[in-house]
Image 1 (tube, rainbow, N blue to C red):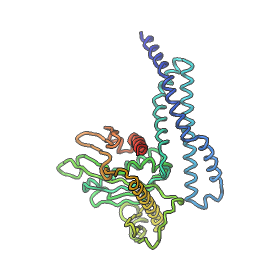
Image 2 (image 1 turned 90 degrees about the horizontal axis):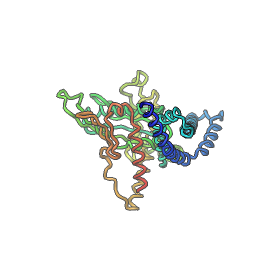
Image 3 (image 1 turned 120 degrees about the horizontal axis):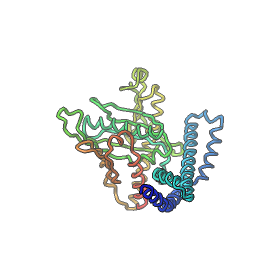
Length: 378
């Protein structure tokens, strides 16, 4: 009886596998075509030649860009080739018809399907700046001390997300609130396609919970803004006139150690014609802070230019205005129930602890698909 049920289960797997393999093969073939694996191999060869140049490290910034791109390109190739091998192994197992091999193939199929779907999302990142590193700025909104605490929670969430993926990050500036949490924070995610991956996080994030700062244990709603911009590269030609800058030097505050807090090394740069202000105080030297602040300023100016160009295009074409700008894009409810829900994609989960610990991929993947669909209809 038991043997009969087992045989029936295997026969069912054998019947379903060919169609599932066929669908996965079509998806993976499409991915291989979009990514152009042969072009990736040529690109890897070019980057390897650049990396082997003994003069490369005379320019530290360029050297880091080359090595990071080489690592990313190699990773893309290995990822595609690995998925193809796994699919071929399952196809071979199905062809053999061996019960044990069929069971192993069926067991690996869900994970393979998920991994192929994740790589498929990557092929949707084709925006002008999608392949860039990302600069993320967080700012407390309405909600008082809870909003400041929420901003600190978001900083931890995004840094943990980056850590989960092995992405390097650099925190440029944190401005502490008086009672708890942060007024604002600015950091960079140093990974290929970081901007394309994170740019749909841009918007207002809303938290609902029992406030730990309310002695009556009342429910509190608080808001924080997330701004995501691409890192500027030399080819972008963002011209900044020194005469248009006001640079203020002051003593750093908050955590950072004696070397940071006892010297006038913090830098605040004001771009006079636009009113954009950026601050960096997390490095030990004034020069390092100024260089980091200029990176953030250039990114903001590039994003401003991109937004102005998009607005002009929209004016000319008479396209619809985005009336949702500034409204919340995602709710994080910790009381009276547990739920994180994205209001654009309808993606939701009750695993609030996991999300706040950086488990964001389900939301980010859904956002990328949603954004691509919206762009294709525009």
